[in-house]
Amino acid sequence: MIDVIIPAYRGLAQTRRCLESVLSAPVRAPHEVVVIDDASPEPELSGWLRGLAQEGRITLVTHAANAGFVASVNEGMRLHAGRDVVLLNSDTEVAGDWLDRLAACAAREPQAGTVTPFSNNATIASYPRFAQPNALPRGATPAGLDAAFARANAGRSVDLPTAVGFCMYIARACLEATGPFDEEAFGRGYGEEVDFCLRAAKAGWRHLLAADVFVFHEGEVSFGPGAPAIREKAQRLIDARHPEFQPRLADFIAREPVRPLRRAVDLERLRGDPRPRLLFVTHGWGGGIDKHVRDLARSLEEDAQVLLLRPAGDGGVGLAWLREGEEFEAFFAGGPDWELLVSLLDALALSSVHFHHTHGLPQAVLDLPGRLGVGHDVTLHDYLAVCPQHHLADADGRYCGEPDEAGCEACLALRPPAWPLGIRAWRARFGALLVGARRVIAPSLDIASRHQRHFPGLAPVQWPHPESETGPAKPPVRVLLPGGLAAIKGFAVVEACVRDALARDLPLHFRVLGHLERALPQWPDAPLSITGSYPDGTLDPLIALERGDVVFFPAQVPESFSYTLSAAMRSGLPIVASDLGALPERLRGYAAATLVAPDATAGAMNDALLAAAAR
Picture 1 (cartoon, rainbow, N blue to C red):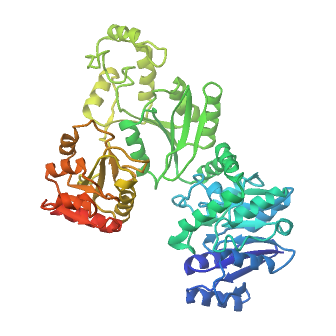
Picture 2: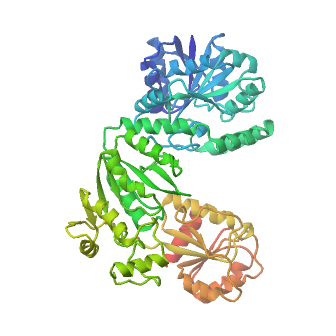
Picture 3: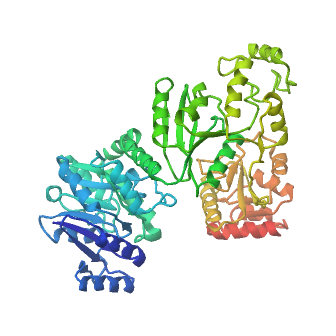
């Protein structure tokens, strides 16, 4: 018998989803569902749990006062001596015979102390992207993903440095040998399972990832907005108790032994998807072609799965799943690995190949449609099929005038092509690709007509590249911060203002005219950018060049004078400054000045900046 222990505190919808999935799962292993209502502040949740208990579907333990997650878990694990247990968060969702597979993993491996499944939100057991929270892949369901894991990784497991507590199978023998979770140190939760696992590991127990199980995890429903502070406190305690853990975890992340298990599921999902699978072939330079390829892939998300083939350096190639949120990427060296790539593409049963560019790829890439038995399309982004230099450019970067073959051969003698072909063989090779294509797509009439001159009979379809129809972005209010930004100059204030601007979607951009004391996220991830240090005597023209809307002085200590304030005042721009030290004294009589308390909230600071700029 196995006890499935689910502490419940808040989140009726999430708890209902969790319990309904557990109670309806076709599990063969004898088990009992134990729910601990830890004095939930939600009467509706408590009432619903009482109803399930009255129906005999769960065993319910009710607390009169909140005891905390760890105490609740320990109480549940003490309830039935001799039973293995599964600790399951109330914001999870299970599917299929999930418990049977967890138990099988524990029984199969010697000294298995704990077993953790894959999840979308489980740090080192996360999928599709490793060590970060993921939304469910578009169109996927927990049940569908669990079935893919069960097929792709049947019976497979790998050792982990620690279990992940959202769904944690614990063998009773390990629990008895290690002792319960530390309630005093980790009362509210976070870190208790890591401490337990590290104590167990020192006694010889193993912590396994069951690679054939997937459990959905929403994350942080019970803890709410206080979760980051609780997590940080727990991490400090773990580091003090178990200094070996961080090096061990870093080594695991560097080796990433779970990567092949995720890749197996990626391929299983791709093979099982009923939509056609397309292969886009392109170069590795980024730029306009890369933008077009990704825009096209996004536009096809509802109708197809798109894979991307491009150079990967040193003669190798990379194959990636071109879909938002997916991580799949495989690398193949030159030579024999090309055949491995062809075999993989063949196994994926592609529907077609779309050539966008071939620079950096081997000649054999042009043979892929024939080898895979599929049709192909070509989009003309430049003049690669005509000119090995791609752009009909001479050595000086000017239009070459498209000389005869002798002129092209002379050019190639000075600038050899990527493949060892003369101009006639080069054009014959690409001509066969163009003539055999179902469609040759040209974004302009000019590029179409130039190709038709070299390949008579070619009939390109003229389709301009699709572009977003959104208008130009409204310029934000530019907040200039002259001089280096350190703690005494208001570094923490600016950091908080940037976070508030992001959270409230305010039209602000903070521009530091100088350097930062330490790195911060910058544009486009955050509304912040820096110029770097500037030469003495150039601040006035720099302020003029930056075309700011307001100048900000969030000093946290009393300034004695401030040369940068003098430059700001000479600019005539509105100034928002801390009401501290010499700043208010010097700004007395400056009509466009606003003073704010140095300890004002970030929201109040930002409101003052917006108001000053508006005036």
